[in-house]
Length: 239
Image 1: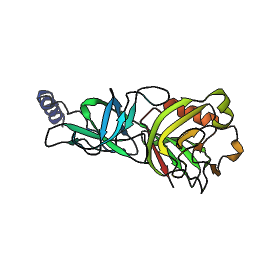
Image 2 (image 1 turned 90 degrees about the vertical axis):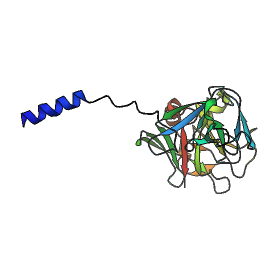
Image 3 (image 1 turned 90 degrees about the horizontal axis):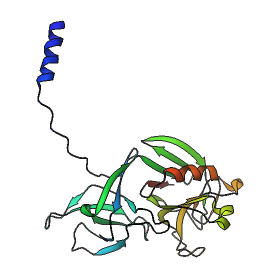
Image 4 (image 1 turned 180 degrees about the horizontal axis):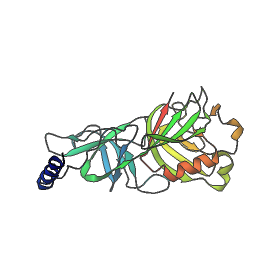
């Protein structure tokens, strides 16, 4: 037996080194990982993976409110335009309508992987933080009423921002804006019906359907989410 083991070890040592693995390719978000695309400069998102396709959005390299690097959630694999050979990646757009998407040239973005995921369970009135496929935390939440519902679907963190002093009693210390919009309100409090996860001082309302579509959690919960909810992190809002 010793002879066999020694021979096997020698054969392994003498074997040629394996070829370097190709870099991983982006894919649709899963429970344990998702891809993001950092926008390098002003870009045009297209309806299809072709420069000749219709423009559906014009994107800045920085986010709308806090002016941090713009990162978008990648929705699937890279597509190649057979006419030009250009490679394109589908992303979730931070605009209406809900769940809108567009294609960006791979050459115009920096691709990266995130292991963070946020899950909102509207029926259970819970917000969950997941890392690498494992649930790290779960908090009670207030969600939209039947008349002003919280939208369902796969969204992403758009731009987390600290709240203003006068807002903190009803929005908490942080507002994590999403690529989600109210399905019924096109304007609200001076905005365009943008949905966010935010804090609240009214903790007695947590666990109830009382909001205009936003998701409220306790201030310690939103503070923890703010530390990890960078732009492009997937946010799945379930029934």
